[in-house]
Structure formats: structure tokens, C-alpha cells
View 1: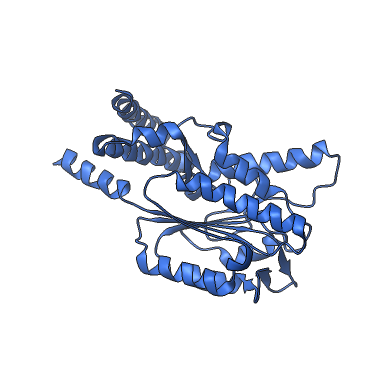
View 2 (view 1 turned 60 degrees about the vertical axis):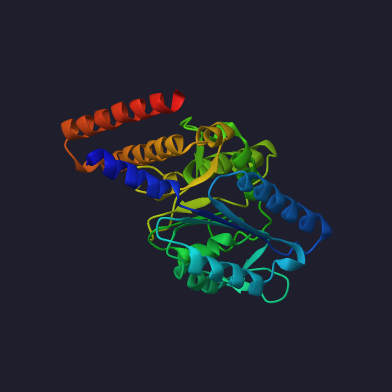
Length: 305
């Protein structure tokens, strides 16, 4: 019975859908228009290679508020609690001290309106706002079961950002997969892009005008260094944004897909246990960790056959 229940649980994970919505807003100048749409196209190409995905990419004249509303409305109708939504915003944003707006052809969309649209979607969510002044959107977008990444710490960091460049790079670079499980999580992609962004300003010998932040507890200010110590990063570690080619190939049969789902489930349990370490007895922590690691090794061995 236990085995049957496990397979049913894995089957639920296997058939979960990830919805990707990428929006490249107004550039204002031809250079930025080309850059923003190019990044959106790069993301589109990368995520379309995945299994169980639905992808919508908006750029140029198609990236309007009405079209974004329509896309998110369709997802609200189709998504289930076990699914995931990854919303990525590229371009320019503004913040007047009260309200953040994402600049689009025609009317802009505010953080408040985005939050309302997202609140209707039952899936777990990742919002990656890579625009200037994106930090001004974070407090409004924060919610339980939603990870929010912003390219800037505050709404007053108004210069064009480079974080988007490195976020796109993270989706294509196996080095971003720091735990070598063939899956790049939102947490891993954030760490990769945050470090690359900081290095960019150091190399250019320029004062950094953007400070990327992650918040995934639904409260608080977020941090550039998510960890079990500060409680940030657990949800982000559970949201896969890219499966590398080996992981895609390993899921080519129903049996392998069940094993891959079980592997991801075990890895998520290990991550959750690490966040609970300070609250449970040491010996209990060691026993639980050892048991999970043994089961993970067995699952990996089955995948490798």
C-alpha cells in the first residue's frame, strides 16, 4: 500500500504543469528595445524545451496590459494547486514613492494590479521582476506560496539593470546547477545572477546601482543571501525554472518520470529539513537526514540504470 501511495504521489508531481510567462516591456530607445526583446526570446527558447510546460512570451507591440491580463486570466482558469507559474518581467519600471508601474506599450501595469491578477492563480508562483525600480514592487507582490525576486532592493534604484542578462545566462549555464541534480531552481538561478551582477560592477569599477533581492516567505524585506539561518529561500529552492538536457532525457518513460519526480520530492524534503535544523534535536536531524540521503541514493541508482 505504501508503494502504491508513493507512486500516486509521484504521478501527481509528474503531471504538474509549469506555466512560463515572460514579458519584455518598453525600451524607450532602439538599443533597449532590442536588448529586452532578445532576452525574452532567449528565455522563450530555453523554457520551451521542457516537459509539461505552457509558455507565453510577450514583447514589442504584443506586450500590452490587456494581453498580459488575458494570459494571466487564462492561467487562473487552467492552473491547479500542484502547478507552478513563473512570471518574468524585463524592461523599465517606475516608482513614485507609492506605486510601482511596469512600462508597457499603452497603459502601464501597476504592482497592485499584478498582485490582484496573480492572487487568482492557485499554483505556487515565482515572480522575477528584472526592471529598474523593481524593488518598489516587492512589498505589494509578497504573498505566501509566492517567491518574489527583484533586480533592485528599492524603488529608488532607477537605472537600467543588468540582472536580467545574468538571469537569462543562469538558465543556460550548467554552472548554475550548484547541487548537480540537473535542475536549476529559482534559488540557484537567483544566486548565480546576483553574484554575476555584483561582479559586473566590481569589474567595471562602478558603484552598483542595483542590488537584487529574494523574498519567499510572504513577509519581510527579503535578502541577497537566502539561507536556512534567515529563513529565506526554501520555496525558491522548490521551484525548478530549468531542467538541463540530461534531466529531460532521463524522463523519457513513465517509470523514469516517476523516479525523477520522487528524486525532486526527496531533494525538497532534504532542503526543508535543513531549514528546520535549529528547531529539532541534533540526533533526530541526523537520523532524518541519513534516511532521506539513503533513499535519494537508491532513487538515483534506479534513474542511472
